[in-house]
Image (tube, rainbow, N blue to C red; front, top):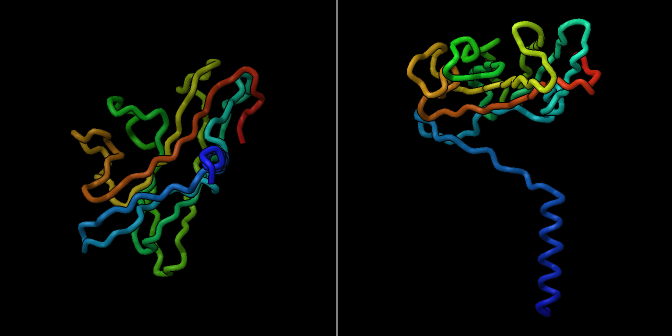
Length: 187
């Protein structure tokens, strides 16, 4: 193979990789309770509603817009309880926004084939006290873990979202941006 042919083949391979993203591995975690390695619970992006991460919201809605948000968890360890916490505009130094808007404990199952779990849907209304001026954005975060520290824990880098040693969290985000060109007043 000539040098030009090898370079052309390499260029074709590079274009193919750019056009078709490779699936990324999910990090495994070594647990302290026996040393087994498992995949932490995570949100299945194909089940997320709204399906787009950026949701444009009209600035001219007659009522405060409400969005019904939901997703499904995937967890290879079917027996563990998974904690779910929803935050809006999280800021670790703000006592109000660092508290979850909603939280739940999603029980496990003895059925090892049942690796998905539906989460309780969340109704997010973007009226007062949220700023609804054009250009304003609000970030909704779904944070999941199989080992959070307790709620309201002082002194942690990220209150209410820090995992215990040996555990992980996963964050899934939606951005709701107020846009005068949008006609979206909720779902």
